[in-house]
Image 1 (cartoon, helix red, strand yellow):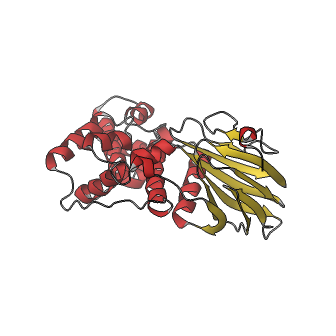
Image 2 (tube, one colour):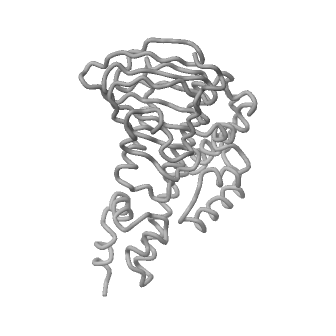
Image 3 (tube, one colour):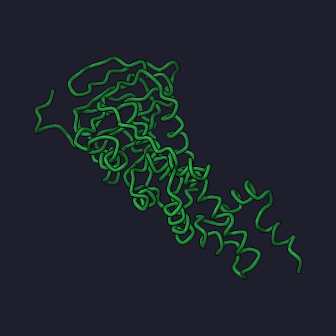
Length: 303
């Protein structure tokens, strides 16, 4: 093992953070995602030097060539384990622990780095912030929810259809809750809210959403409700029947429909006005929810 003073620090907040450790740069890399960073890698056989992360990291095995994957070794906090690394297996590397690994064959994998502060923020009334400690996990098992998050994040990066980062924001909170519930050394305390959100608070939230359709963040909504994002997600859906993400999307489409019928704005201007990243993004969701495209709606209006 290296001496503590010689351990390299990997900080995913920095651009091209993994270039000094891996043979090749990332194939795909996120940019500007607050509290979270995603990278997709295609690497030849390699042995990575001992290092520590400033963020919590989830590593996700995608594919090996040739199949089946050749197992490799990983050291987590001084413990060595030989991994099977089947497609879909995950490893969890908490921030601040020593880590190194090797791959015996070329491989495709993804990494997702999460700010420790995000877990503290999401779990503020579930777990004492000083007791949020993730349990290291070797790449020998799968997790269906994490697999879905990785798949969706990769799809969003490849298609560049982020839509005001609303989906990323929602996935970020969902993942943080999942990590707290399943991989935290201290189990969350689950409070019971039988009646959902108070009507006055719900009205305040829906008015805020309507006034900020261009950029609505789940963390901000939870702050208005004065509760953790975990409880806010549960109570909002309990009160309205939709997740915040579904409700905001619905309100954006309703606003777009109104502007199409009663304003002189172009479809492209309406798209950005209500929070979509461009006209094609609006068109995709508009047709899914309304049943016709914005242009078809305009053509159907009486002249």
